[in-house]
Length: 306
Image 1 (cartoon, helix red, strand yellow):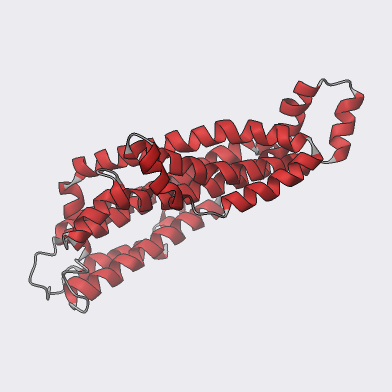
Image 2: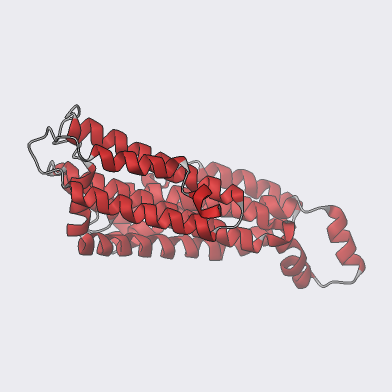
């Protein structure tokens, strides 16, 4: 009964509709590679069934089903407008099967670009957090310094870090170090502001209770104030992570010789929009996966709130 209920979801119906659409005649000159589109949707359908059977809560099942439903709707509309009715220009908007085929063909190249981009993100982001969070704790410990620090960080954080790229190119030895520097700036100010805000908003009663137990300042800072500040710290870190991906892609489009931004810029300049769409999709997937694991970490660290 449970399996029967799961198989009646609208996402599975859309999967069947997508397969039926593949039987319609193609109206484009190039090869739409329908087999690749079918293979991708078969993998997605198998993954969705596995998720529906393993996930216990109905809320998460509905969320997964809604996301997969949107993906199937997008693929159906994309296929109809390209391969089946040729409404969109084939050169600019290749059909999904052709894009998936190109993705598999460029798999090794895409993997190297992902590794390059993630290496820069992780290096700059972690460096920013290692400096910003302890500094924010100590600045936020003083109300006067914390209030001033928040306004300073908001002012400096409002300046797009991409404007520092010319100075970075002039002062730093490699473009990778410039990219790390840009990611550092993009992550540092939101994390610093979030940490100081979290420290300043810790309830006075909590601090007074700890002080009455003769807790030393170091234990007070890292055992009492830091856990209480984590919600605001994660807000700042989340903002920094989101901006970092945007800025990294922009920076790689300017002067890099590797990375996902370079992949998109290089092939768009050559008029290869099939690979351009591949790059856009890959960036979306990579960012979504990073955000997913970040949210998992956030829920784990803040499990005490639940």
